[in-house]
Length: 436
Image (tube, rainbow, N blue to C red; front, side, top):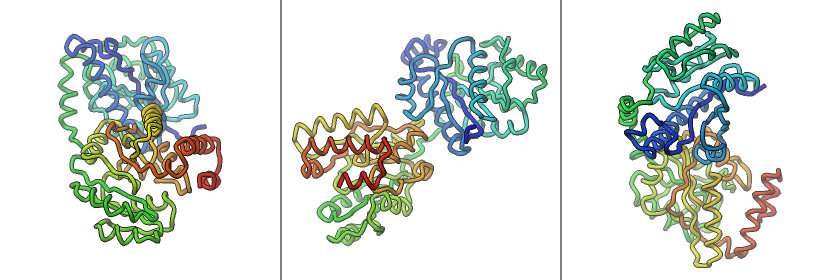
């Protein structure tokens, strides 16, 4: 039996030019229609994630076209993605319902990616209705429906329906009555399938303001004996509008805390431990956006705009910058390339890439786990289950002191060994001893 009682399934298509939104190709062209498919799916997925987060529901994408790897690369590695399978739309939906009920879910919703008015609130009302009715149905303006929910299997509800016609909703309602299924009707909303429907998407985009324009960014810097760096780092950040600087000190003995306070940062003190320090700094932050920065790392010019723009994208709840190591050694360029490849392919940036996220996503993820090592790795894994992680092309420039101390090859091999050992279950305390 599943821990979750509700499953939300998003039906969509991988955005391949010439295969997506085909009825819009004469107006938008193949690439334009595929781009619209991409944006609308990200919009629907963002609202689905919001509901899943709010209600503790499970989220799955059933896709046509493309592959599971392509879908995960697009929507996030933690997203459960399954091919829709064969048959007409009714057969594919019936199979999705059958599978979800077999896995132990008691209420299941299927939603499309074509309805700009489909929000987390609409989906939430459908879930609530399923506590009272057998079927929840969201009618579309064109005679179809944008949402169908069941609280028990009903495969006959999808048999004999003339899919793609104006009769879909009416015949589904009639079928529910013949099957003696109680039904709750949601509000009627428009789908975007034809050129005349594009106005609905344009209205939805125009009504959706840039959510983080001007939002306060709280930069949290954990420190332990960072006096040579901290004042300059704070001075850089304080020149940027709508940015607050919080230094979370872990008991420095070299005057770091005094230097940070004198430079104008808000100071928090705790016992040493990077996770503990960053969580304390985040708890005192006032910003809607949190950015965690190492004391020996410098953000690129214009970082605040980049961060806000990234988080305004549909489905993005967190991100990081490209890694740049402040040393001309050619071997370190290879380290940078490997870090960038890992970040892009697996959406797994590390703490030295200046992780940022919405404050809500940070809280929803449970914050940094209080472990002595790999706290950034674990936080990113949790965030990846909630939404997409953006990797920005501009670099955060970080000190090469770790590589100087151990040597490039030894440090790189040690990093990879620690990751593998962590994934195999080695305790964080043991990993910290090995790393030290």
